[in-house]
Length: 616
Image 1 (cartoon, rainbow, N blue to C red):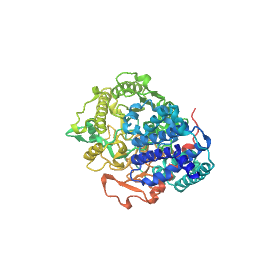
Image 2 (spheres, rainbow, N blue to C red):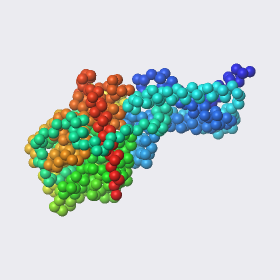
Image 3 (cartoon, helix red, strand yellow):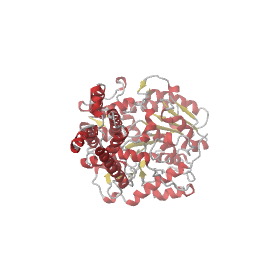
């Protein structure tokens, strides 16, 4: 009788839903951890599921099927969100991303473009269950057989499952690599760990954060007389932040067609840094605005505009204002998007121009086109110049936003057949339109007399073609473009162009740089000293060696140096090196000392920003 009762109990929802969870764990593993042990994923994933199922058996001892379906829906949605997020960002989404839920409606086109139909099969069982649950005769399936033996078994299983889950978290909690943490803890355990973890970074005393301490960690050696010091003194500064522009589109032809003829001409005549890299995080475009204007690193988890938007941030707009500059920022989207209204207060921009200024003319994605952005901005810059004071203006382009399916009326690049109906092909057409619009802007600056009295800085805000989102055919196209496998070193690479009319040297500079270096580089050209201003970048016109800590798009502990990109495993020793130009990895390309210095730089930046007062 005892064995019969236990046999009946095991035929109930507990075992059935466990089998469903095994299938969904395997699906997540296939998409995210394709090289990880399947048995490890099951061994760490199922105990966390059983903890929840045991609670159902205790809390809902009678008609429990509805509760099982609800918990199944919750877990399935977590897996679905993790898969979707990974397919673009290459990271495991946590509760921190809930801060960005209100941004989804603005970028719904990008979200839906990532939604492969087969991902929705993860919800198939839930749809079936809901249909069956409407039929009364199926509800009895969830009715418990209240026997002492099953309660004892449930209690024992709960204790063992909880112990296994806690142990898997405890053993791997010290790894900095979030992907490795999730792989070894199990996704649900990792999500719980992200919520309940009390581990917080030990912050540094602000008095210990000095420009000298930062220079020592970065091993910077600034010359007594820097090259190009003050050669653009008193000139206007115009910064163009290009949406999703990666470096490979520059100086590149597809079947004889130039992708970016305007930018190609600029890099022949001015400073061009081909080894330049993004340093953004969860805030993407708004993070790039933050990094470029502060020369600080992004926050550990959230978007800078939301985490730091209420602070009085030392910044490029404030420094230039102290030197007589007017400051303004231009973006065709609503200023509330990504909390930019507060970010612009924090950065100290005197004026901002958003959708209210640009209107709804010639809409592309969620704002007026780049042509409208540049045309109306050029007119406004002319007005600013007529005050007799120089200006600093930052322009945020948007027409080349993911998923890059620009309107047919904007398409100017004829794709070869093999590129048609691919993300890579759409991206190339969008970047070609971006380039065309920049050409119109430069022409107007030359006509209204601003060009010769301005420094123009152009860079990409973040990557556009994540490795994780590409099909095998699209990866093949990228291999055709590069002549090698498309890796992190290619994906994170964005362009930087410094066009300073009047400086006669034209150079393609090979040194490594990042977005954090733009502020000090501009300061050098303007002849403005940052000796007593805390910043974490360096003037890359005068420094040929660099160390760029990374967060978010690469796991914590990753960094970029002069040889390539390093990504840690569980720690430094089992990390992976990605050399530039597809070279063979060499252990001498990175050192553990560099790894520790990169982490210390992040700590100092976090510490400094955390002690800043709030803005008015």
